[in-house]
Amino acid sequence: MKSIFQLLPALALSAALGAAPANPQDRVFDVRQYGAAGDGKTLDTAAIQQALDECGRAGGGVVRLSAGTYLSKPIFLRANTTLELDQGALLQARDEPADFLDANRAALAFVNARGLTNITISGRGIIDGAGARWWPPVREAKLAGLPDPVRRPRLVVLTDCRNVRVQEVTLRNSPMFHLVPANCEDVVITNVTILAPADSPNTDAMDPSACARVLITGCRMDVGDDNIAIKSGRAVPGRAAACEDIIVTNCAFRRGHGMSIGSETGGGVSNLLVTHCTFDGTTSGLRIKTSRERGGLIENIIYRDIAMTNVEIPVNFACYYPKIPATDPAQPVTATTPAFRNIQIINLTAAGPKSAGFLVGLPEMCISNVLFENVRLSAATGLTIRNARGIRFNNSKVTVTKGEPFAAENAEVEGLRNESP
Image (cartoon, rainbow, N blue to C red; front, side, top):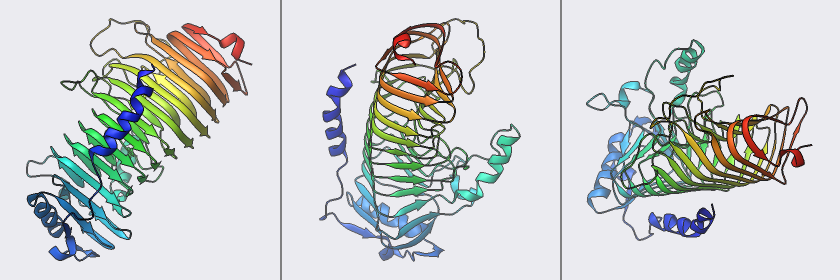
């Protein structure tokens, strides 16, 4: 478990250097010079895309949006290009569903990149997804127990890219997920703010999916679903785990569903460090969620120096999703059986109105080797530990207002008697 700490300085440095910020001497392609009005009424897609295309053909540079509101359909980044939004610049998506279908009727994001190297989105401007039109029918469908009535676009999707930087910008009001690096390597996300109403459905802030060498630092996320969700739907050739070597540090988690792994974990997740983060008002704090149908190996996960206030469930690790059954018989182990092992939670303080949390493995595949060190949990009800082996508590305490601080079933746990009140 020491390896990820040894990895931290080198990973942070290599990731930071992987996608360098724009050089002041880089050629600048101002979208207004290509006919963009920036008045919030004129459709500026063609002008923005022309600037991006010419920047790409020139070998790279900076595509600049100065102060103004740029109404646009989906746009497509180019290699070696920085999309820079000055303070006061708003890149505003239209909310017409037909705009987000390509010629083959496949769904598009608002900002798209595929197979590119050295791409940056930066500046103190805003990218807005105009989600308000999309959310109401989805809310109604969820209340009725029905699937989404329409496939919603994401805000920024970067697929198969290398050396990616997203910095300083504000992303807001996506119809669905906000920032999705998918099968990317060497990704740095710095000082990004992501905002959506608390009741906006599925508006995850960041979903790094099948990515390697990712640094997320100094970000603020206040959304309607997962603040960060590490996803790993299937294996990636050449990697031991589809998601590996990820650092989340100095981030503020506000409303949302917390720091999640899953629910897609079939490709595996390895070497995740979450450190020096605050959580305020999230439904879950630290969460690992998956199921027998979409599980994989999740290992070498470290959470340290975490402070939580008003978090409903501070620790929520379960091999069931979306709900944990009251009872469940063992089943045969398959290629999609989830396995959680080698997890450390160090220097965590959390106070919330509901449960201290859950560690629930499968009867056929127990959660194994989890350390709680210098942990203080305060909640209405205690910590449930089921189907678990090698769970250790060191200098840790769970305080509850009713019932027992711990409930253990088919679990091997050390330190509870001495550390619980």
